[in-house]
Image 1 (cartoon, rainbow, N blue to C red):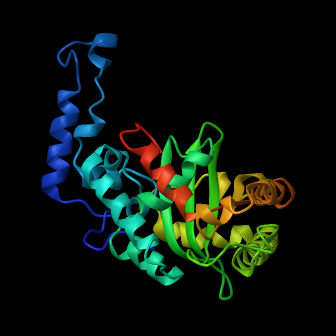
Image 2: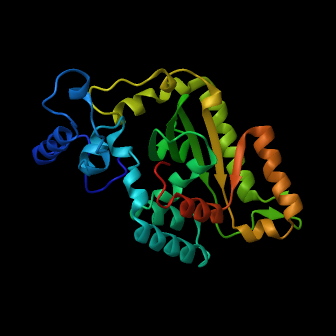
Length: 274
């Protein structure tokens, strides 16, 4: 469940805790005043130790730190490496390895750009087991003004053609993903509350999960299948994009290609939230 190899953000060092307290004290605009003036603060969240930004979140080891969006050079370098990999005709496992082993999670987090939540809090779970039979490649959990929502993501083959019959029908790569997601959806309609132990395991000690993690509200669940490249859509764009719209409208499954992830990640650079 932990995204990060080198840290356990559920625990924080004494040094980082002392640094956090020092910064919090410096936030007071009128520290010696009483009443309203003494309560005024200047938020210095961006100066908090990274470990504390994680530690202070609901899921410390799955938290997506907004300050990572400011690392322009690193993000551009990651995008270039990802595009180079895509152009080498990789398989699905190579894509997963590139993201997970190098902690290039921004590529998946960029999918938030398609939704109106994830701006208040953003979390990512990799290889999220729904039960003994079903596992999502990724689960994004984002909070907006209306509370938490969930994006279940399935990755399919990045190199083989996503369409057949001159772009007029989905190929097996999209179809396999859609069938998989529909199985998840049927399962979650009956057993969504069964995921609560996994969320409890990941949450910060002492925190309580809000009702969204237990109530079976299908409007908070979203599904994404990623397969192929933009060039597969362009072979017959009238049909292929119409098929994408149809799937989204009829089954609520969003179909993306891997070049979309490059586009979305570029948009995230220097953004203030996901």
